[in-house]
Image 1 (cartoon, rainbow, N blue to C red):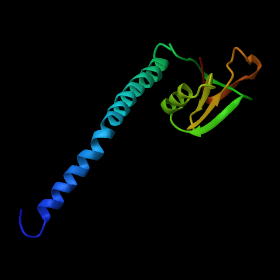
Image 2 (image 1 turned 90 degrees about the horizontal axis):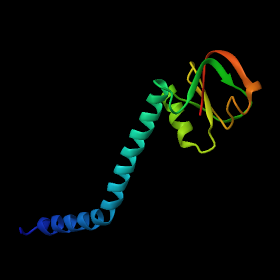
Image 3 (image 1 turned 45 degrees about the vertical axis):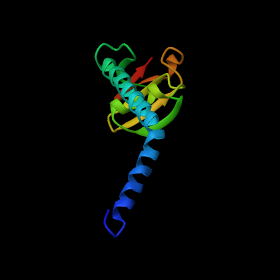
Length: 125
């Protein structure tokens, strides 16, 4: 160590870094694992929805009116993710202007509320 004490400061910094990292390591690992699993599940759900419609049925040119629980601006993929993450969401409308409407009803529970709408797509579970 030299006379200015930098070696001691560096050693103290490394000890503090290790002390902080050790308790946080499991949390960081769990966050990483669950975030990756979440991303894989919701990505699969959204893309399956666009392909074979396992998760949502879609009706292009229609929207469900009257039961909106949340409105947000996002792309079609993000709208599906948001609905999947919201327990109350049973269907959603996505409009080509980027508006997403989450609903707590479906076309089956409210058939009279399914309306034609150019530029909209209804997705129901």
